[in-house]
Structures are given as structure tokens and as C-alpha cells.
Image 1 (cartoon, helix red, strand yellow):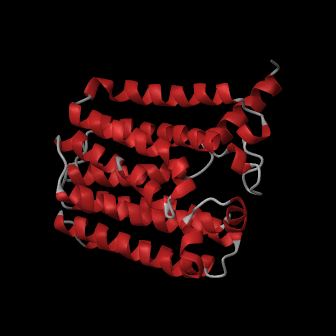
Image 2 (tube, rainbow, N blue to C red; image 1 turned 45 degrees about the vertical axis):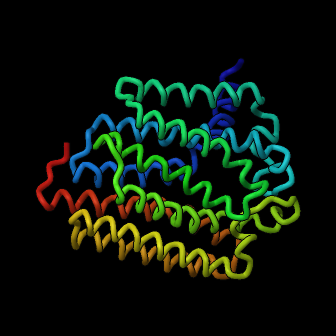
Length: 295
């Protein structure tokens, strides 16, 4: 294999694993919220590293599973017809090896600190995540399924820091489900014409002409629930300011998606990385200013 061929192969792997997209960060931010809230602003630095690496790798594993399950659909969608498994630049055996390696590294990371409860949530998260591609075949709101899959990192983070979950844990999970419903509906709006032709379900299709309203309501519910958890945890002005900024992002997203143009919807989806990061910054900085020592 020449150097150029190796470079092309690595680029194809990167595309398959979505290392060049924001999805891994959208999985990461709620886990960071949970680590800081569960630890009252003083998370274990080892757990921070484990969840940061794990979020990126498990997102990649989920994307590979999704592309394998959807490979016969993706070829009929303009945006996805050039994906590595569809175009043949990556073979199915190669894809499975990459997915297995991602899962193996994550398992090795948590193995020294594994507890029965953490393992239980890990197993549930794997089942939900790898079943998500098939939810689009029968479930009218697969984005809710995805939100639950992404949200299971929250109780895992809580268990990592405290050994148990709490009511706040599950409120934050519900908040994350509504956040995912908002941003993944924006994402689904870009493919709606093709998805209607091939007959798969998405929230953008289910909501129909009320899609923009559904997105904005989902943002509102999510941010309200996050505010509830943060205020109950004793967070103050800095945290609330971060939520106001998040609301401003959502308001800007309305201007991007109201005409339902693909470019604007995709831009709104991508900007949710900044939403998650802003909320995390508000949580972390508020704790820091209250005198909670990081680490």
C-alpha cells in the first residue's frame, strides 16, 4: 500500500467514524453536565478523561452501526449516497473491525473502575444505541430513541461520581431527550424529501408543517428542565446567564430553519455544539466562583 493509498484509507475511516463532525461532542456535553452536577463542581479527572474519550469512540461505533443498517437506504439519499460503506471505499468487515475496536477501547478504559450498576447502565446504553438505526423503520419519533441513547451517559456519569442515581439524574435525561429531539429534527429536515420517498420515519416527517414549532418547544422544555436541575443544585447567576445564551442560540436557529432550507437546517444542527458547551461552561464556572475546587 502506497502512502497515498494509506492516506485515502484513513480519510475513509474518518468519514465512517464521523470524527470530522459534531456528533461526538453532542454526546459528550450532557455527560460533562452530569459529572459536574453529580460531583458538586469537583469531578474526578480520571472520569473526565474516560467519558471524553468514550463519548467520541462510542459515537463513532454508533455511526458505523447506523451506516451498516442504513446502507441500502443511504444510496437513495443525496446527502448520504457517498458514505464509505455505500460507495465501497470501506468494506463491511473493515467497518465491523473498527466498531469492535471502538467498543474494546471503551471497555478497557472503564474496566479498572467497573461496578455492577455502572455495568448495567453500560449494557442498556449499548442495546439502545445499536437498536436506534432500526427504530427508524417503525417508530414515528426515532429522535426520542436517539435522545435516550445519548442520555444514558448521564446516569453513568452520576453513578461514576456518587455510586447511585437521583431524581435530578432522570430530569436531566429527559432534558437531554428534548434537546436531541430539537437538534436532530433540524438535521432530519434536510433529508425530508428523500426520507419520504424511501419510507423511513423521522420527527421532521411526523411533525409535518409543525416541525419548526416542535423544534422550538423542545428547546424550551429542555432548557427549562436543565434550569430546574441547576437551580436545585444551588447554581446561580452565571449558570442562568449560560441558559439565556442558549435560548438566544435557539432563537437564532428559528431564523435558520423557518424556511426549511437544507443549508440553514444543517447549520442550526451544527451550532448545537455551542449550545451544549455554553451550558457546560455556565455550570462549571458557577461552581468555580462559588469556591468549589476543580479536582
